[in-house]
Image (cartoon, rainbow, N blue to C red; front, side, top):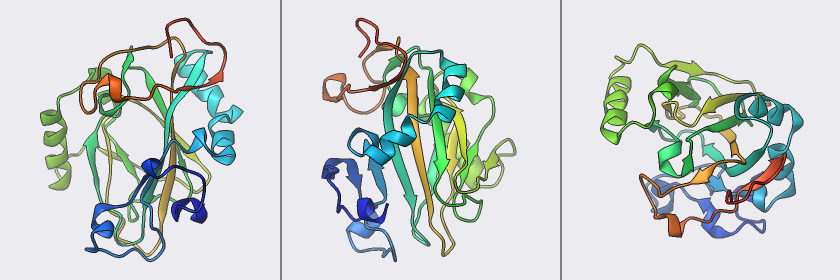
Length: 224
């Protein structure tokens, strides 16, 4: 893992993100150079093996059906002391252009994820409300930061365990204020029957690389 984080593996630089405050010299991380890795399973056998774990796919199949693709994956790093807050958001409109918007994320803890070092927080039931506008996200975030969002719940995990959430579930994570890392690996799955549509936020559809990996079942014509 440390070799990957330090850019010493074949992963292309475009999939490695350095925390901006570290990159410009405003903050210093004791351990990590990279703060996020994308597309790891598409280039690395170890990450791909995790993405294809039977135990994980069995859970996802129970939610999405028997034909599954890995749309994207991300390693999230919250280095000690400098790991920042991730505001409340939904995953689907930020880069998962699928119809229907049924995305399931398996979030695996590589370190113990606690309230103190920045575990995920969920707002239960929000996945039933379809795609929300960013003003609504911001309203939830404002309540959370002020300590007035009573409906949010922490998702503390032991290293080696995982949680699952829908792509429309509002979720966030707090800063890492400890001396311990909080690393997590998220694998994002969709039905192999899904169709792609123009993005709501972010890049145009033409800028997206639709290279979703079939991990269980079969392909379907027109679904890539």
